[in-house]
Length: 302
Ligand SMILES: NC(=O)c1ccc[n+]([C@@H]2O[C@H](COP(=O)([O-])OP(=O)(O)OC[C@H]3O[C@@H](n4cnc5c(N)ncnc54)[C@H](O)[C@@H]3O)[C@@H](O)[C@H]2O)c1
Image (cartoon, rainbow, N blue to C red; front, side):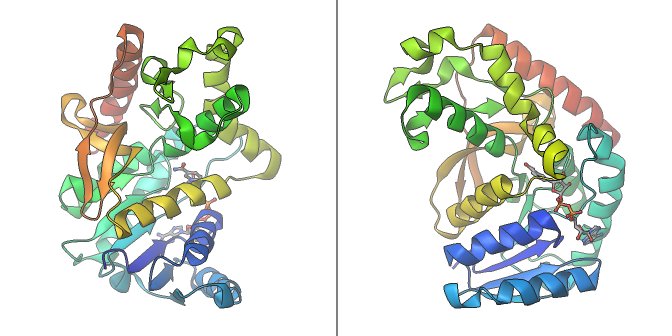
């Protein structure tokens, strides 16, 4: 089965929490943890293996070459944001790390799926596409999936409906230039903005709060990891079971010559297609602004 061997590069807070979420889901046969600091990976494997009685997934420490032969590699290796540091400021530090990770994993299993989580996720996904030489549909990032989950949580509380009934996306950069595609959002077939509860909502503030939520968590406790682990474990499930689920992920968009968050169909071979989501004129302008900022950075790494 595709997705039966999954490697996680970077066994810090995010990597270990993804590993834990995957163990609980029991959807992979083997989980391989790799970290430049061998003691970190070893410590996490020992700790996670104590939860072994709840799972059928085997977990072990591995090396980069073994990771390169897995079905899915999740890259969380990288420096994390310091308080008030933007994701883009992380680029140079994380470019060096990603480049060494990919070269140490080579030669790559030609069918491998590279799922980038380290930030800035859109730029690092673009760089991973360049450095790996893999087809672009096999190399993508977690994008605005987490931001969209944060949006759906807020809307669920406002409308008092289940999060799963809400179809609404944050698109563009996983970062400061992201925006909400309000005009295409709907619940039960009814446009979101037609709900009476939405008339009193300050939408600009809501969008800002969602974009700033990571900073708020980082200020309070130093880093974020539970939300992203939930997102990534559901992406692995979508790949493993060929779910063809639709999620807003970091993917290459030809029109903009850069990687950014758009809704895509995800199956066992990776990204199957981009959904051409309806955007009004204001949202199109925001998408173009987000794309312009990202493509200016991507050009430096082309
Ligand atoms: N995409 C998202 O929505 C999202 C959400 C949360 C965090 N993140 C990002 O995830 C990344 C990891 O965050 P964290 O909190 O786990 O950080 P962390 O510092 O806890 O862990 C990072 C790990 O990477 C390892 N590492 C560094 N260089 C390496 C290399 N060359 N090879 C292998 N391992 C290496 C470190 O030893 C460390 O264990 C950050 O870039 C963070 O911004 C992304």
